[in-house]
Length: 540
Image (cartoon, rainbow, N blue to C red; front, side, top):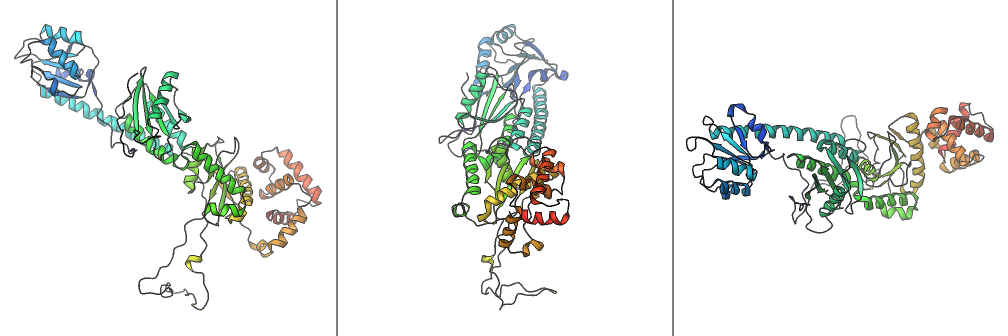
């Protein structure tokens, strides 16, 4: 196996910014020979070769001046030992030799043809009417066309990757698009080689093992690790790129072919994946966040407040993928990032909703006094039709204003249920409310349902009296029956929607509602009864 090459290694911080554009692709020798106006003819050596540039030299030994990949043009002015001459060109890595006939040689020397065939160097015959500068110009034109094609390919890939990053499952979508663009395997690995997500055809076991070992090289578990590394294994090209964030995530690629712009396309994917994976870098960080959310939603207020650093208001959100697919930690983390929070729990088990804890929004703007002013002088001046606050009447100071609650908004590809903004003392109750709101949203096919706080006439009843009345009225009902009645009333008595929200058969809903009517001794078709029950259920 070849030794891995590490083009981006450095002792400093790894760079994740992709190159400004792909390098110029090499030109296949066949494309140059296809230009009939040049009259070139291959007379020795293999047919396949890649040209990186053109160089003209009449030196007896041009080896010191070659970089490799050249089409060397020569008229053989100082050619005395063809075998030694060709050997030096092969050692220098020249791609091909173009030999111009006349005025020095009437034909290509037979010894030169034999040497090129023996040492595997393509030999082209250049006719007298074709100047070397014309050949060079043709190569540069082919390179410009190839670079333009490669730039278009990279641009299309960039647009496709950006579109994938906007999907509700951005990490798998980006990997799938990357695998499609490169025609291979794209995987997101942890520092220990665990595969978090992958797309594309899986390489053979030996190549997969080599790719895992290559990923460990760039996993940043030690200072000075390179930001990328490449290798080949049995004809499979392997690449590994470290993601930003310092948690050891690695983008690993395995492809059958490697084009000049592939590194640029991979660099774009690295930037996107670094941003998408930032909210939940690695399994350990995801587990810590999930554990924190669970504790916050079940701990006592005294334990919660120091962890949150704020008394609220807080909003609990339950979320499910619209397409019904399960949400992993990275996808859930991307949802949390889009909502503006890192407090996400996606590890409660298969079939469970993602839980997000959304904190208060930005503090209200503060009115600052200019130098030489007092706070009273800094108060805004009333505009026509407005009144100014009475200085004698006590008003809340800016520092005393409660922070505005964050407002959840619909997210593409997700169905959300949110509690009303609640203080830190009521997070557990808000969690149950958010679960009911999500069920309501799924039943009504709404992207977002937000539970409304108690208001209007219901707010006029003292909370203690309302709660006592609700407990007495609903005492005959078990918890499942009360939940079914609450859901049924919130969906305006729809049997089908209630069944969808609760995940039960519609006949089960009918039986439960019938049982509620019997236990309460009430006619549930009466609007007054429904209103009183809804008021009571809102207090529990």
